Amino acid sequence: MAWREVRRGRGAAPLRALTSAWYYGRALSRLLGMVRRGQDANDGKDFAITEANMFLEGFSFRQFVEECYRENARRMSVFDPALLQPRLLPAIADMAASGLRVWERRRPHLRRRT
Image (cartoon, rainbow, N blue to C red; front, top):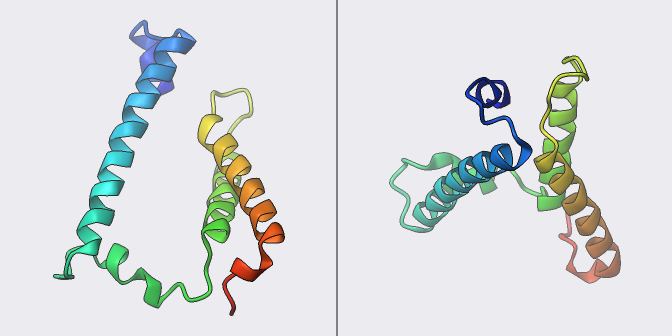
């Protein structure tokens, strides 16, 4: 996507940031829509959202963020480091995982018991 934007003459960092923010906003909006629909009575359409807890016993949001971060690092490791690579979301995920680790250490009584 970044290559395409540069080819179209929209390669300046602020323009790329705005374009990325637009698409991240759309993706977040769709995700929130799925979550809202998942709160309604389950008709089987959103199985992944409504029934996932059956498979995720003992799985925490921190573990999810850390797993996504590791998977992104694994996938990006095969590309040439000189290529333009995502940095915003991996940085946010790293900060979120760090914050969640600190939160769990300071609030041991809130940890999920497995």
